[in-house]
Image 1: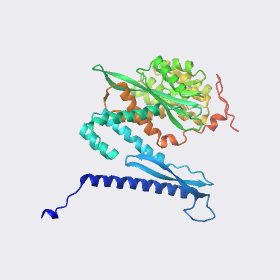
Image 2 (image 1 turned 180 degrees about the vertical axis):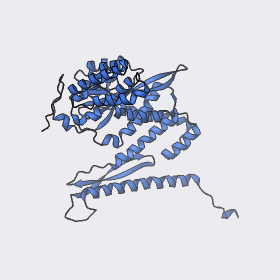
Image 3 (image 1 turned 120 degrees about the vertical axis):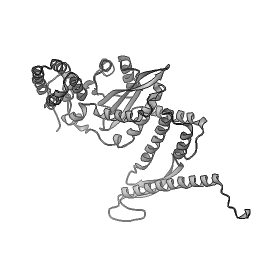
Image 4 (image 1 turned 135 degrees about the vertical axis):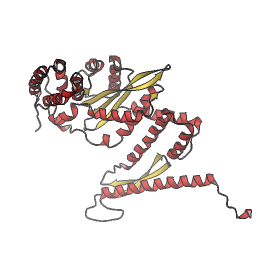
Amino acid sequence: MSDNIIQLNEQLIKTELKELVRSSVEDTLNALLDKEADELLNASKYERNASRQGYRSGHYQRNLTTTSGDVTLNVPKLKGVPFETAIIERYRRRECSVEEALIEMYLAGVSVRRVEDITEALWGTKVSPGTISNLNKKAYEHIEKWRNRPLKGGTYPYVYVDGIFLKRCWGGEFENVSILIAIGVNEDGSREVIGAAEGMKEDKDSWKNFFLWLKGRGLKGVRLIIGDKSLGMLESIPEVFPEAKYQRCTVHFYRNIFSVTPKSKVKFVAKMLKAIHASENKNAAREKAKQVAEHLRDMKLKDAAKRLEEGLEETITYMSFPSEHWSRIRTNNTIERLNREIRRRTRVVGTFPDGNAALMLVCARLRHVAGTQWGAKCYLNMKHLDSMEVIEDQDDYIDFVS
């Protein structure tokens, strides 16, 4: 009777299944590479037609580490057409989310048993409790390398900066930790996360050290820095980037005025403020601001009028740049959207054990977002900036676009 009992080798089955998944991933990626080559050549293998763009010339092998194991890619070599594949980078971006998930689980206090189950699903092998910290250390090393990478985007005419506050536990007490973030628009018009660092608080020393760190990694050609009003940042800009101008985010400027405006009048005041920044040049904006300030005083909103007059010049700096860029360089919206995504991710953690833990999770999210379409598509057409002269201390700008 016992001779009829079938005994299963569980470990062997797991190994075979893992190899099946790995080989499936390898076959799929290689098939996608071949398909991509066919589309570039406008012809499949051995096909001859009048519209063919080039020819195949064999392939070269490239190793890629995935969550399913190491795979060997047969990357096509082409004659007559450069082969630039997006397949590998797309897959790698998915791999970045694995690091982020591990850090997030660790910081969120997920139980060791649960981490073991999840890591088995992610990496294909169950991670023992003793190695979880080592895996986090490895992920931290990857993120730290990315955070300190040299900036090779050429010049960065526009730089958006902001600080995001998170909670950390220090000596048994809870306190805020500031993460300073910078996004640059490079000379090709693409957005790039160029820096993230712990600032403790948004004072002059923190901002100056942050700017010097960016400059030391290759940040150059900065012509406009966009951000919310921070005294420490304003004092640091001329010391580190003396040729750069400062643009105060108009959205934050409006909110500052709304804070001294009755709720019943906010909607009406908002329309008047937007009319100022809808002007065609600085002179028109200043004239419109005078009219709005008088109207605000007639409405018994003296504090609102005062804030408008005191902060106006900082909010119309963008008018010295191409009008085609105005809608995207007068606010800090591009970085605020990232901050909302960061808050959504960090909310599950609550309070971080230290500032470095907060920085690592923020960077993991930034690194993941930067590898998506967000960083690949053109954000601004920089030809408009290249073909104009920025007019210093004048009320209008002259566009030399031919």
